[in-house]
Image (cartoon, rainbow, N blue to C red; front, side, top):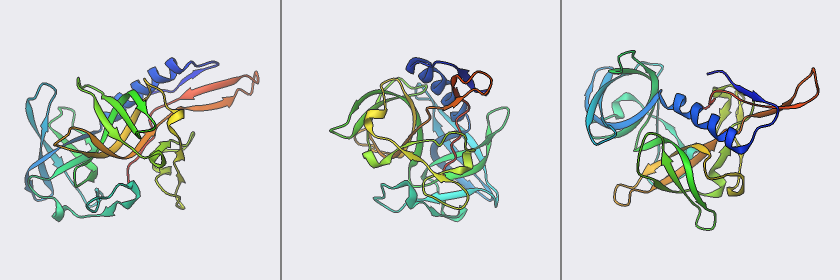
Length: 236
């Protein structure tokens, strides 16, 4: 998706472009329960809007990154490498990759185990004292309350490619910039990584990530401009 550039951008314009970018980004990721494991693939059972179920073939390869978290982990940087042998029927997983044209399969680039998923949503409300945000997931009707620490609020680094936006500093990229609750607004679109609590319906967030675009100066006129292109976020 091409970036949007404007000399002056209101928060409403930023939010409109954020949402459009996240809708596009979310097309390449989905969550569900493993129904059956095969050699080099598995069947993922998904719950569709309205409650219907659908199966999807997830194809893996030696290049697929598989990550898992120890029990009770609340830090996204705690991701440890795993293997396909650690995927079992009944597991809740999140998959990102290249979906087929007919939507019946996906070539997995990354798989998160242990019920961790990436939720794309807009913010309904923020309670900084309680360290919670209420989110409206894209394409869903019911809001979700997310518990998130202020230290786990992040902003994408402007101008970097997706693999260069990382949870911690490395030779290959830069750590995501930190935010606080005061930087966020109702209506902002975000990605939250975390685990859903089946009993309460709330989520324990491990990271909330947003993109506010890039501010620069136009060489021809010297005027300040704002650009917000496609969501450039890779996952651990």
